[in-house]
Image 1 (cartoon, rainbow, N blue to C red):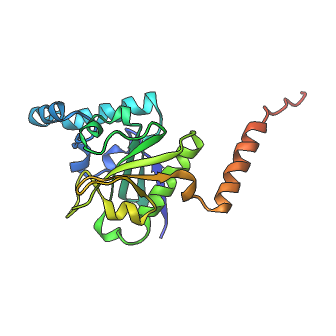
Image 2 (cartoon, one colour):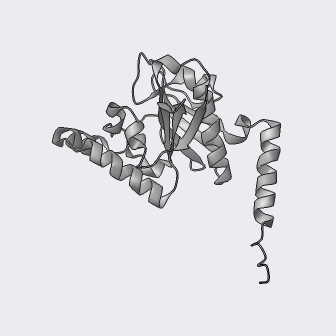
Image 3 (cartoon, rainbow, N blue to C red):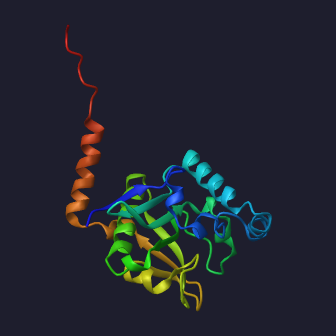
Length: 205
C-alpha cells in the first residue's frame, strides 16, 4: 500500500470531500460565514482563503493519498488567519503556535495510523519554519465528523491539554516531542548541509 502526503494547493483542492471544500466554519467569522453559505459562495470563499494563506504565509495543508486515491487531509495556519478561533471560550491560541484547524480521514482508512502520520508531517513542516508548537480546539463531546477534532484523538496523537473546558478544551503539541532522535538528527544535518551548500562551480569550456 503506497501512501503519499502532498502539500495542499489550489490544484488538488478538488480532492477534498465536497462538503469540506465548501465549509468556511474556520476561514470566516460567524456572520460572514453564514452570509457566504446563504449566498452560495462558500466554495469560492474557501478557495480564496487557501490562495491568500499560500501567498502570504506558505503551505497550510496536506492531502493524503493511498494508492493514488485521496483519503484524507489536514489544514493548519497561524491563528491570525483563522477568524473563528477567537469565538472559543478557551482562546486565544498561544503566539508561538500554529493552529491545527481540522483534519479528516475516509472511514475505510481510519485506524491505520494515518492521523498520527499527518500530525508528524505537519510538525516537521512547522519545525523547519521555526515554530515551536501546534495548538487545536478539541471537541470533548464529539459524536461524528465535524469541523472540530475529537479531543480524545488529539490526546492520542500526543497533544496535552493547556486550557481545560467541558466542551472545547485547547490542546497543545510541542513540536520536538513528535520527532524521534533519528529524525531530530536528520533535521539538524539537513539544516547544517542546507546552510553549507554553495552554488556549483562552472566548468571551463
